Image (cartoon, rainbow, N blue to C red):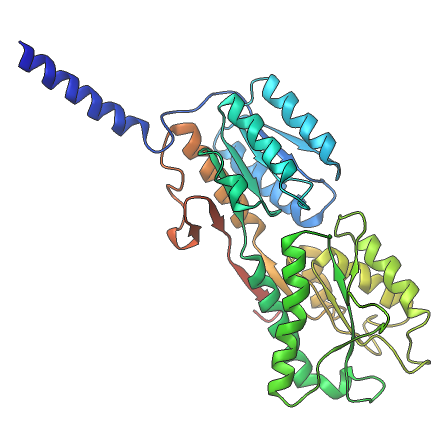
Length: 356
């Protein structure tokens, strides 16, 4: 009898472990709460549209929250959602300048014993790894800068004489940075120029020169941290009043951390008579491959961008949601080639010039 009891207990334990999986069994059944840093960001809007579609297709109850660029608002939204019985948090965190905001959200999720998945805007590994039900879905943000820099360099080598408007043998550029302290913005700002310079050097061409020698940062940053078209339009409109063909110091190249700022720069250029479909074109490069950027590339007002796959990101986020809900292994159904350790998934980038 004792032997039979022991066998039954052992079988029960085996069944229990098999049923639980990595996430310890099915999760709570309340809404999945999705927090966006702002609804107004074009790329994030693309993610949201895809997310809504995938969540509905999988019969997952959800609610979207718009922080409108305010971290205090987002933190309060998280607290409210948890109080209402949220089963999972999916967070596009507002403040990436330090770990504090993300860590606070992790602590709230941990106290409620619900999973939290951060996405798109960088969250440090130490924050994610502080809770076993936390994951980050993003990109290899350095790769975007490397790919953009290489694309720009190759374009300039092929079109150097046309781009060098004042014929001084150098290319004068402006760089639009999305946000201070944001790791993606930092990497794109650095490598977008460094890798371009590497291509130029290999072709026997001089380094790019920032248009304003008094600006030692060598970038213009959106002070609101919104990576916005308005910031780029305002900056470039002001700059073009001083740096022009008439003055012999025209800005000859625009590099932007994202497509929104690239499109804002195009608005300023078009107001000055450039990139209008006829006449001279100042090459503009961005990141994201939004529909608006693709249209700009198609009409010739923009040269190229780096595709950040909004649909691919949404698909992975919903797969992780299902895994947590159903008690499966965290990365079940996710391409293993894109999984980094036990804490993140990287969505691959691709170049986009309208020809690929």
